[in-house]
Image (cartoon, rainbow, N blue to C red):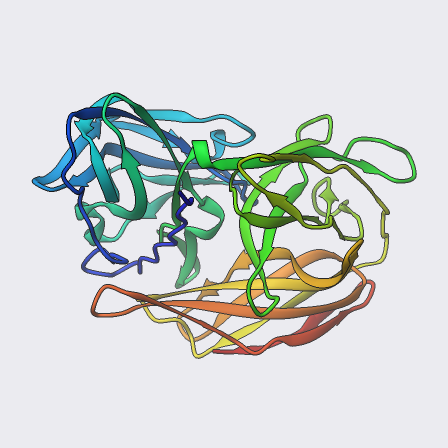
Length: 384
């Protein structure tokens, strides 16, 4: 069995929910039970992301089966660092194979910014039919299946400027997995000069595709002791742990040069690994910013990755050291990275387009180089 990761792109004004395929359960004998848990990854710039979840359902042969009815508003940012929210417990369903789940959202969705202001989080009308997740698992009679849903807030909030004020639109990126077929990597990040812990630091688990391009698998943040755990990683893949630590807040950031681990091949027999690292502070900080053309339409969403070549014990690879959602304006679209240690980088944009047939197409800009110098922001414009 494999973990199934399906990123669902929804445009702010999309009239219908985008479905990457569909599927119900194949016939089985007897019944099983299912528990469903919700987790989230870290995101900066927000104190809260509040999403009202009414029901969680799964597609069966006879239609949608209700697994749970939480009917509550949850702050996704409270579900990090190993914290989860149970959406369904002990739900009974026919034994068999299942291929699709959905979350039904309600009203009252909001975001609370770093400055404490609260804004409505606009949810497309198409979400009345649910945020749909493509899954791939079997429920055996007399067994319990534990399913974990990762509501990836960092790649689900799109800022769309309207006049002088920004609007916040939900474009859900949601993954689901069977925890029995996942592993984890844990460790501690410290300052190389002082051995002090590095708290509140982003840590990525990344894989390399067939062309050697980095793909984000999961992210987390270190705790007060600098410790982290990257869990829910599907076995059968090789993962690299990547971090470019930034501590403190503007304008007194303290940033460190990025590092990457060697690849850890997670298997059913060896699902857990550890990786700790000491990072070197870099006082020479700059930034990378630019525009994207053409501007994303209402059925599109853009993500920008900051890339850097890092040396691991097995060789050099180009990894994602920071990632951000672009901001869509009336006539322009922009992105920006701050507190970037001076050095050689590259930048690439990914665009997700919702097609009329319900599929989602991903396109990418060419990779553009970006040399960051102390005290300066380099401009890199990207075409899609």
